[in-house]
Image (cartoon, rainbow, N blue to C red; front, side):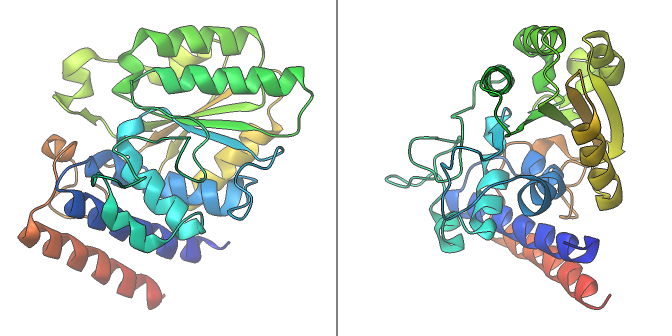
Length: 278
């Protein structure tokens, strides 16, 4: 898929995120929007998956370690054809299969239930080890937040993955610089993130997480890296694409009201029109 089409798709995914969170009157738009371009590239370019057969044995696995940004994953899965886009409006509603955090038992395309921060990456490491032991063809991808990597379990998993030389494993860190309590550097600085993963014997790539050329090159480099896992540090903007949400920690876990929803959707409509004119 060409970059322009990826950008258009990512914009539609952002619309789905805002629609879902507004409908739920709760949820996490900031980190979902910052990761939207990563989600788009993964599901429309990188991952070997089939919406018609979501449990096929040789599919690539994806674990959303920062499970609270489920709106981003759900919107991506819906636009990829795993379930109807219209169902995004049922997010967090009583009786809906689209819960506040990913549920592998009820949501097509979800490989691991997640939500408790730090634990998802450990599950991904286990999947990668299983793939090695089975001599399987699939690769394993996980997305973590930069606030999430303050959790010690992340580093236990990283130590194990590096020691076991799990080159079928890719961790993407959504480095938008903000968490629920503010700037990650002020709350409990994880910097330098790249040097830490290098110390755990990861191949590390720093990218602009909104630049599809850089995203594409990073995943290509990860596939070509042998003998060690890869960590892609994606530098992003929290709330990307919505004017009043960008770089605002308050939108980590807040839903837009009706007036804010209209402004957000207008921002994304204009962005979509601009992309269509290219």
